Length: 569
Image (tube, rainbow, N blue to C red; front, side, top):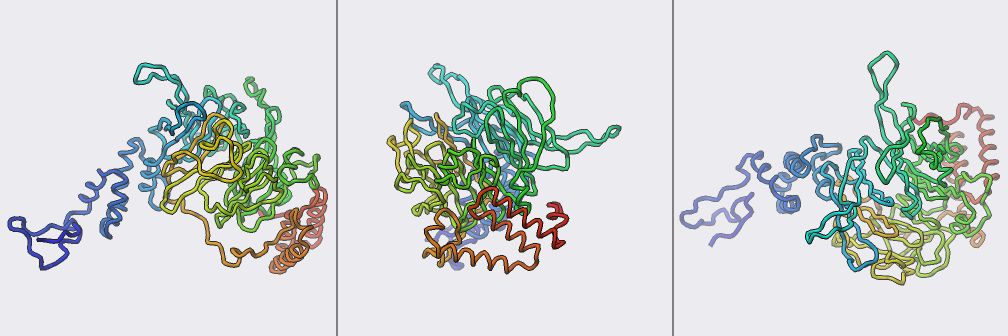
C-alpha cells in the first residue's frame, strides 16, 4: 500500500511504489499559480482560511491578494476599489464576509437572536446606532445606511412587525454620527452626521474644495432638516452631543486633537430658516493646549476625553451626577461646568463606556475599572457600594467591548478557544440581563448566543444589539502586565483616597518631581507642571489660578510668548 501524502509535496516516501495503472503522482506545485489561485477562489471563506493552515505552500497561495480579490468581488460585486491597508483585498473580503447586525428583543416568548437585513452596498460595518424607530449603520467606505423597521408578510401569510428588515442609503462621505446620548431611544429624534462635502471654490473658477459639515436628519423619515458647513481649513473626525434639547452642545474633535463646540436648539431645527452659529474652542483644549484628545464619550450631563497618552479628563455639568461619580461635591463649580477634571489611573486607558451616573475604563493591560453609582450593582464589584474613584474588577480581563447603560453594564469577552460570551451586571428588570431577571451585583454570563465575530454592542429598553465585523488590521492592543504591577505596587494617586494614605501622597509627589526634573527645557517643565495641576483634586478656581500663574511665568521667561506650536507643524 502507498502512504497518503500532502498534494503539494508529493509522496511521503520517494521510493514508494504506486498501484498499477495509476502512474506517478502530480504535485499541485506544478500547476501555474494563477490556476491554483483561481480554483481556490471558488471555496468558501472558511475553507480558504482552513486550507491556508495545512502547509507552507497553501499558506502562501491562500494569502495571495489575487484570491481575495476574486472572493471580494463574489461577496460584494459592486465593490470596485480595494480600500486601504497592507492586504486591502483580504481585509475587504473578510470585512464583508463577517459583517452583520444581530439583535434580541427583551420580553415575549421568542428568546432567540435575529439578524437584520445586510445592505449589499455596505463595505463592512464600522459603527451602528439604534434610534426610536430604526437603526443606522456606518460602513468603512463612509456610507451611512438607514435600516427601517416595517410590517412584512411571513411565510404563513401573517403580517409581522420586523426590525431592520429594509434599508436605504442615507448619505455618503460620512465620518461619524451621533444622536441624543440618553439610553432611552425615545429621545433620539434627530441624527447628526459629520460628513465631507465638495464646495465651490473662488467665484469665477471651476475648482472645488472639500469642507466638513454637520447634517441633521429626522430619524423617523431620513429627511435632512439642517446643515452646517465649516471652513475648509478645519477637519474633524468625531462628533458627540451633550445637554438638553434647547441647549444641545455639539462637540467636534479635530484631526489635531482639539475640541470645538457649538450650541443649537433642537426644537427649532425643523423651521426653514438660516442663521449663524458660533464655533468655540472647548475649555479642555484652551486650558491644556499641549493635550491631544484621541476620542470622546458623552451622556446627557457629562463628557469624557481620552488623550493620545491614555489620560482621562472629565466634564460634569450637574451636581447630582457629580456626586454619584465622585461621592462628593468638593471640587464641583456650578459656575464653571466645563472645567476638565483629571482621573488618577495606574496605566494608559485604551477605551471607555459612559453611562448616566457610572462609567467603565479599560487600560492597556486589559484591566477593567468601574466608578460611580452602584445602587443596582452595575459596577460589578460584588456589592452595592458606590465608588468615588476607579475600582478594578479583578475577575474580568481583556474585554472586546464594554457598555454602560442607565443602571446596568455589559462586557463582551473572548475565551481561550476564541468563542465569545456576553457578561452583564446590575438591574435585570425588563429582561435586560437575559437569564438573570433579578439582576446581579457581579458580572454573570448571560443566556444569549454571541456571534463569532461580534465586536461591539448596545442595549436599549426593548432590544439588545450586537455588531459583527472582523478587521484583520485591528490587532489586540493589550500588553502583558509587568510583575512589579501584578503584585500590587502602589501607583501615583492624588484622588479622594489621598487623605487616608499620606505615604502614598508623598510618594506620588516625589514621582511628579522626578518627572519635572527629567524634562530637558524650561518650556517642557512648565507644560508638565500644567498637566500635573490638572491631575490634582483642586477647585476649578484654584486650577485656573495655577494655570494662569504658570502662563505668566512662561511669558516672563520669554519662552511662551507665542503659545504652543500649531498642531500642523
